[in-house]
Structure formats: C-alpha cells, structure tokens
Length: 139
Image (cartoon, rainbow, N blue to C red; front, side):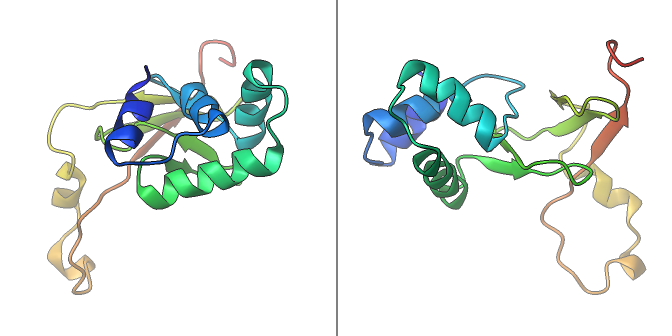
C-alpha cells in the first residue's frame, strides 16, 4: 500500500476505487505529475475514471495538506505527494522535469539570508527554494 494511501486511511478519508487509484498514481519519490498525467495513468488502472474525479480528488488532497501544488515558470500545476517530508525542488529549465532534493542543513536555513529589516514584520514559517538548471537530457 502506498505511503499516501496509508496516511489518508489513518485520517479516515473515504477510500473509493477512484480515490485509491489517484493516491496510488501519486505514490513515490520524485512524483510531480500534472492533473492530466494523473488522469492518464489512473485511466490505465481504472478506465472509467473521469477527468473531473481526478481534479476533484487532487483538490481534496491539496486541501487536506497531503499533496502540494507545485508551479514552475507558468507551466501546468504539478502535484507533489511528499508534503510531509521537507525538501526543495530541482527544475530543468528545458523540459521542466522536477526532482526532489534535500540540501544539508535546516529547512528554514534560507531565512538566515533574509535580514530582519527585509522581513517587514512578517513571521516567516516557510522558505521555498527552487534550484534550476538543465537535466542531462537537455544539457
């Protein structure tokens, strides 16, 4: 059973066959699929699943905090199931592939580079860092 599916069951989420398939498609490291990619993969396992069901399920998972929406450079939103594991993203400027990376140090280490005067009174609770470059296929 997938880690995502286990977390959802533990929360008492009603697991229908459609929801189960979406959760299974999202399982794994470095998974950053668009809604259409989730639908295409889910349809291979459950041909009757509708695009609307996939979109609705993804929306629910985002609201629950079990999946994070990732947007890069105006491309289609992607869905990251590793919402509970602190990480940043490495994005190819060519093809848009996204990889999870775990740099050494504190998840809020980026805050040290933001002087108090530049925080404008904000209480910062999250820092998002995106590394960009070319993957081996695009280089």
